Length: 293
Image 1 (tube, rainbow, N blue to C red):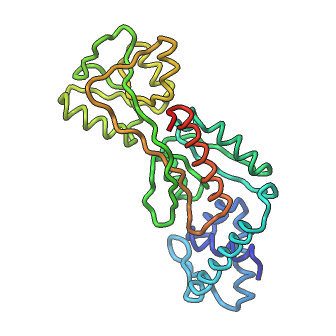
Image 2 (spheres, rainbow, N blue to C red):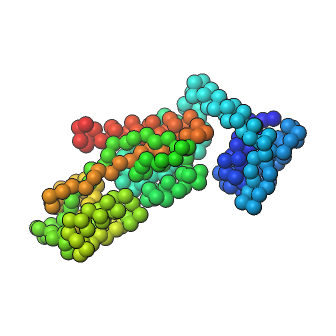
Image 3 (cartoon, one colour):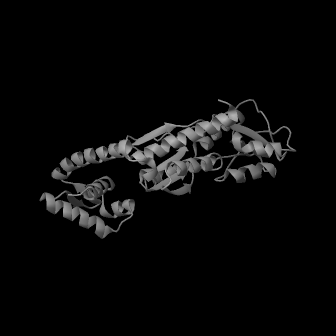
């Protein structure tokens, strides 16, 4: 019985099938099947039963799962306590929301490379809704998104908020929010939902929201006169300094965006946990450098 067999067994149990486990582990399906068969032969018992949706644990499989999880948790503790961080070689699949990608992501990647010089990093930039789904499907290891994710298996590290600000075209001195389109985050985001409700409550059904999946496009839409925008202050400062757009105050401010570094905490992976803490450190350093707090 090997650690690799136990790790494969746990992955099949969590994913509910050999194919999904193979995709998660980046190995072939025959390799996964062989490891499970060898483990069953060694233990002299069946660990899985086939069902229409994949596989489920047998009674003995459930018993093994409890022991295997304890063994893997102990392995992670050993790595955390004994292994030198500069010797860790692995792949980290990182998912990041665009707001972070355009602000402190480069500093985060630089620090990760310094702490884990042998770590390979694969970065995906997407909307938070998609990042959440990819994390829960185990196709991402660590996500920086609008959180938290309220699932028992996830751990969320709080990050500093992103303040939002109102922006207008230079030649639009007094925007009428009853008729002027408001440009903001994509339709499937929390800011879009909250903004739409607030605009309807304040200005009636004539208020318009123009969503965009690209923050840079959103700022360009404001600069070109299409409408006003509720967009991240940290990204709008440069355009204001260049006199391409201007800020304004309609009498109320949107709620700051809350972000988290979120990852699957059950089972625990020490590398991912450490990477999340690095992200948290860099995020607060970036926030302090801008706002002094």
